[in-house]
Image 1: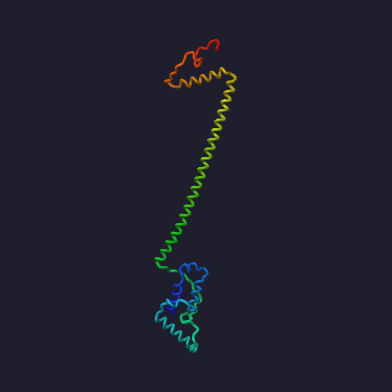
Image 2 (image 1 turned 60 degrees about the vertical axis):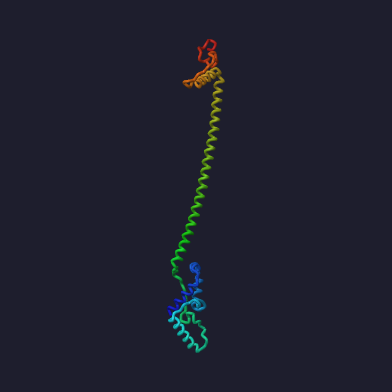
Length: 216
């Protein structure tokens, strides 16, 4: 009887898809298995029985015939009721898959997780590139703005210095001419091999000559 019950149970469970079993959160499939075991409505074609199981079924059928006084029995001989068993509940505690199936499932799960990880890494790298590009743009813009402001300030400073010099020298043109000549001398005689050819009477040398009463 135990063997018969086990065979019927394995037959019904074997008809189910592994994915359906795993995702059967509300127990719909287990209820169908329970009803099939009680009614004997499925699993009869592929089921393999042993002589002992056949004898048990035959004895159960004889008892049913005797109890019904030769009438046609209403109990399916392939059901558990024919053995005096009522299946109240069916629970699946563990699924033992073949090694090759388990490896295929684990490989698929690993591949899916690796794909998710690669996608996250790719998104992270993309965001990092965006942040670096934004930072580089801000640095370039800030430096360019600082350089522009620096040029403006230098120009304004040079203009202000020139104005101050012009205002100061306009009050004493002779002193301004003297200062400009000194700068010209400094720039002209800065090298050791400088050679200049010009007339001694050139106005360029007027401040190197002994001042006369007219220039005092």
